[in-house]
Structure formats: structure tokens, C-alpha cells
Length: 172
Image (cartoon, rainbow, N blue to C red; front, top):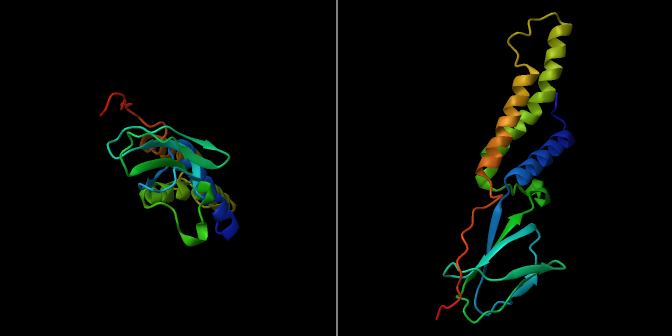
């Protein structure tokens, strides 16, 4: 059975990677007036999504050599909100830092990943003992469940995000 810690951890990383690739998690950070507009990317940073000010206007920002740089603009209204995709594969698995919003689907997906090799072993054991295997889920239905969960991940994801661009040009 798939119950060894290293194999289970590898499956957890595979599940986190699948969610990251199909959906992603957007994390937000606040920049207050007086805070520097140039700062190192957070440890869990994957990709910059957007920077907006208090009125929802976009602020130009870019990443250079691991540093997020926000362009200073006299029209910015503080606080600023920096949104970035979180690198789920960089999570501290021992500390239990999996975001609450994805725990349910991640648990279901992880169960599906574990069930596929486990059911194969159970099926072979049943056959070796000449037991009836008709009540066991077949490989196709287990893979179909995995695919359905992947589609659910993609449907609820932050990638791609629908964004409306609003220009602050001409504001007083």
C-alpha cells in the first residue's frame, strides 16, 4: 500500500504542483505610505499578478533580479495592494501551511492519487487469492475521478484571472 512517508510526501508535492499549474493561489500584501516601493520578492513568490492602489487603480510594477519595483506616481492612493501567485511547491509541509481555501480539493485529489496505485495492488491481491474483484473500482474510473478533480481545479483557479483595466489618467 502507498503509506510510506516519502511516497506520500511526493504525492502531496505532485498534488500541490497540479493545483499550482491548473489554478494557482493569489496572495496579497499591503504597502503603506512610507514603505519602500522596491522590496525583495516574498519567499513564497511565484509570479506578479497586479499592484493596485486604494481606489483600485493599477500601479506599474515589475520584477528585476528578485526585487518587486513599483513605479512611484503622485496619483497613487495608499495603501497599495500587491497580488502575486504563491509558489505552492515551496510550502513548508511540516508546518502545515497549505492554504485553507484549497485543502478540500487538494485532499480529494491526493486521495485520488493514492487510490490509483493502491487499488492496483488490492486488485492483484484479490486475484491472487481468487476473490471477486467486481466490486472494486476499475482503473478507468479512478483516472476519470482524477481528471474530474483536475478540471475542478482549473475551473476555480486564479489563472487566468479576468481583469478589467481602469485608467487613472486625467484624475485629479
